[in-house]
Length: 384
Ligand code: NDP
Image 1 (cartoon, rainbow, N blue to C red):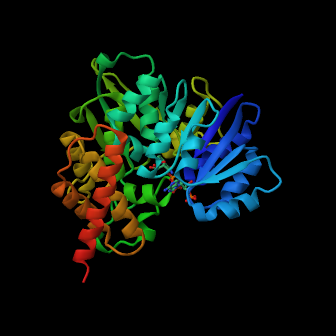
Image 2: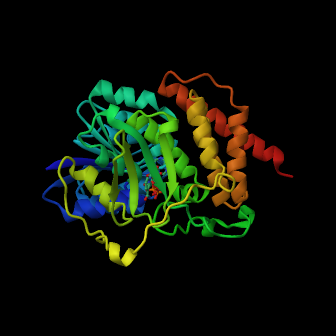
């Protein structure tokens, strides 16, 4: 029996994880679950899974959570400390599926001795970078990527020597606006979150539409697999059948293929080093018939180049990139700015950034907070 904590249990990744866990009750026991504000869904998940601890970030929802858990053995708590307690709860595996830099401290708390952390929360790794991978090495904690591209690379790398790898190729669907002829200024949040292949939370859906998601993934790949920016390529592959590739020094290329269903990489992380069955569709290559590839359009989607520049600049730049993007995406989803303003705001924030490189998670959080304040102040200034 593998004991599991699910951070961000009420989200898209959290729900896909639960779907798999509930199909194999003899293999998995959920011990703790968390959410931001959704007390109703969190209580329902805690009841269904028999979790012993449920943590909600929003302290004003604690009363509701307690009421909904009445009559169960599940203890409820709220606030930042409660999230950290959940992350450090009794378990062999922690699923890190909070969205944004808000998940950073819980991920760091999860990297306890002997723990495996299945990481969906890419923003945590993008912002903490080597501070996180060093902590994982120090604590002998394993970071298992859930992001489909990194999970694909992880699978392709199995058993190979680092020096035999020539480059990694991350595939990108291109998002909903890959072929749209119109200017991107006027696209709406509803259009931006309508991803052609994947069903995901709102923030990552917008990131996929701007290609910032691919940029964050290039940074994530750098920290997970230790390759420099010039050996981390991106190719647009609209069918999302090949989830990423590894090219070796002899010219061999290994790819991982599968239906675009997050339950496949999540199942891999849940069962690692074994495999379990999933209800995901099987690949029917004859029906798919063709696989297409093209270079990303960096002029229409400047976010990808901004992310790469942030990786190459190093230091605080990835934190600034991520914080500005989180603020901008939130504002776009609220209807306050245009789609094309997202990359512009991120570019301005990077340009203005002058923070020293972080030497602790406290530094990372301070740079994250300061950048958010700067970006918000700049927005207020620019609004009539
Ligand atoms: P969702 O928005 O669907 O879910 C986010 C989860 O995090 C929810 O449980 C939410 O709780 C919780 N949460 C949000 N804000 C906070 C906060 N400030 N403090 C604590 N908890 C919080 O996101 P996704 O599941 O789509 O994505 C999660 C992560 O996984 C992201 O980093 C994303 O980039 C990554 N990822 C997602 C993929 C996907 O297919 N969805 C694919 C690959 C990576 P509540 O419900 O109460 O708001």
